[in-house]
Image 1 (cartoon, rainbow, N blue to C red):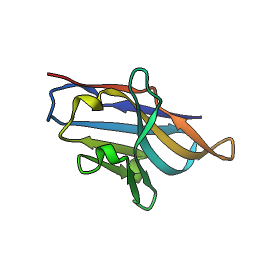
Image 2: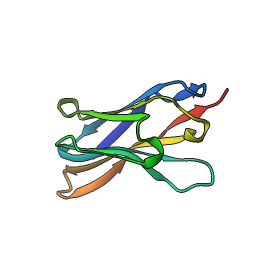
Image 3: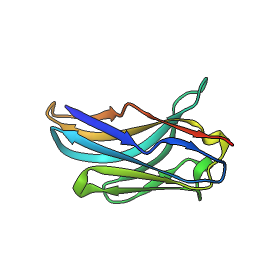
Image 4: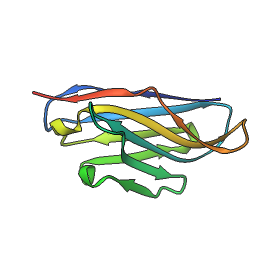
Length: 120
């Protein structure tokens, strides 16, 4: 199986920064896309940013220019640098990976989530 472990969430004031990390482990043969999604109370889970094996990135309009996604493929790790944070960025952030593992198919895997709270 594939495990995704996130770290780096916490409480930060508006305008501050946080860096999230997510490391994938387990019986992984290949990872195609890695990314971050978030879910605020009462809302559906939404895309924040994704990055492909080749480094192509995609961002939600609400975070463009403030968040930066990066990836260390040698470590199967993805990062999310979040700057100029706003209260509306408050949510549980989930790591996602599209990976080929022992079951022999491309599948979606999710981390357990890490809380990000932006408040003064």
